[in-house]
Figure 1: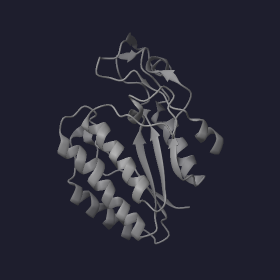
Figure 2: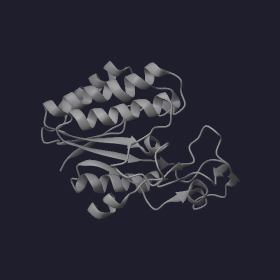
Figure 3: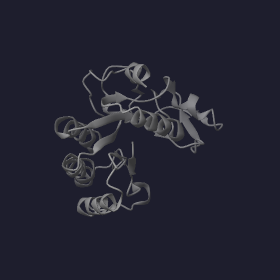
Figure 4: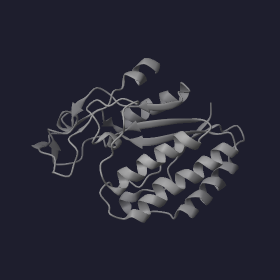
Length: 216
């Protein structure tokens, strides 16, 4: 199986392409690859979680995904779409794939939930992954002791994503490792101060990952 990871910008440095430009670049790159490419891993998202810029969230997280679905369907390419555990911010604890995702109440959460729906509704062949990854080593001075989830370092999560692609999993999967606090994870690679989550941050984004553990 040949697969291709799509990551055309890094919003943390403010380098965000217009949707039309991203799609143009994507198509140019894909057609330049051998014709046996059969999987695209879409890592593109506007991840400034609490931005009030509706249009940028809408264009990147929804409109672009909609166009990417069209492209993949037309060329019989499987779409692996990376989503987020923040869609469970206001769901029940340890939410499973069949539980109602109640997002974090901002444009990021809203548009990510809509793009998940687009993938599930319109894609002919997809793997939709809800996850969260953090930089290694932990690079912040403080770490939240009351923030709970199945997140892990980016190398751990990316390895699970690659294994899921190679296993040819399809449909919706919660992806992560054992439940932990942000402080517990951070303490593995640094010596952070214990801090408490700000009031606007969800405290529990835990997921049921038993489906992944069963099928991977």
